[in-house]
Length: 294
Length: 275
Image: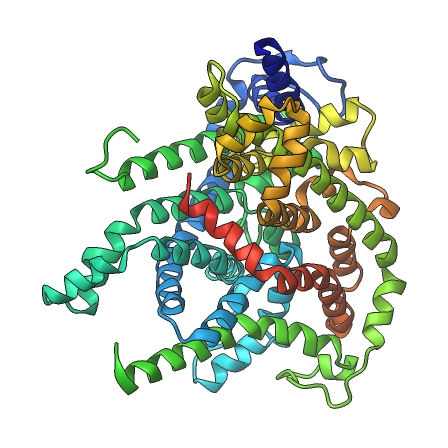
């Protein structure tokens, strides 16, 4: 009985764990290992030269890499700055009721998240078109100057961020709404009895009790934004003048255009470290100070 | 905010949000029905004078969209089936089997959820290449047949099933395999549906891995075909064809979402609340 139970544990676990081992754990270890080698994408596995940390030293000296790293952080940071308050605001707006209108709006806000990012990028590329797109026309109607959007060093990154916020804010809003449903209404009632106004209730009841939800939102948003690839690939190719060149795009180019597997892997491993560091920092910052170990 | 002013502010906010979210989709649909002359007007025409479906026919002439649909359904569908199988099996063990190191192992599984594919793209491609699977359905699917999110989701829901149910089946002599598929899975209806939709939509939308591994045009997915369509037809007078292509590419996901909205949103919400 005991032994067959053990056997079933192994049998049921092995397909899932085996695949994760082969296609996630092994590749990430290989990325670290390849990053210490000089290796062309066009030579077979194992036919590489050990170079120690040379690839990393080259990265430290590379202006393009520094720009790509900075752009990646900028894109993630700007996206977070927009997504967190918007998702909170939309979550509270939609949680508050208005029955059917609320349910319908929830669906409308969420729909862009279901669409392939390539399609989103293409649609927004057209919206941003300086001559033929509607956005500059709308700006002119309200008396603002026309923008070059994706065509200018100053606005290209912001344009990509707006596109991302439009596509993903509905997803984070749903997470916030789920968090709001977990807050017992007695807390609000008690606060009201104590004379708290709406803003005070948000500040002293809603936000502290949404801590875990917000932590989750921020972590997922960091993970999603540091790997931005599609809009850059389709709309800007990293331009103009490297203004939207991000790490994932640079990794892809290094590996699949220049064939530099070692250098691409070093960049990938840096991206991995940046991501891990960011997640750890956020967990520390947002962890509930009153909670115990977890 | 109570009373009339509150309702007005709220209604105004609803309208602004809905308009902002819908406008890009409106623009896509309207533009797909425009004539080349209308597309070349500046400032742009918002509503086509004589809506034409011609661009939708052109999409299928310029890029092999029909074949791409077949490829996408195969790849996204196959990947989804694989994810369901591996997630249900592993999720059941993590929820209901006791063994040394279980929670540590589950922690490692969860950690893989946070690894972006771009970080391991190079070795992943070389592994699949060494297996001779470049430009095949198997190569497109194999690396993604198991995922931590699916295992996590299934474990969460299976943990909610009472132990007594499983224990009494064990006492009746049912094997673990029978218990899993006859007792546990039938109770997972909405959770399995939610995971199936997530997986299907995610893999329908995938770009980076298909771009890397599917090289010949007849293997392209809808998303790759759309990407190809853009590079063929970037001139403004062809934007109707590009927008028609985008509309076609998003149809399956939007329909799936509208049909299964509740399941879907409940599934997403559960990932944020528990855990």
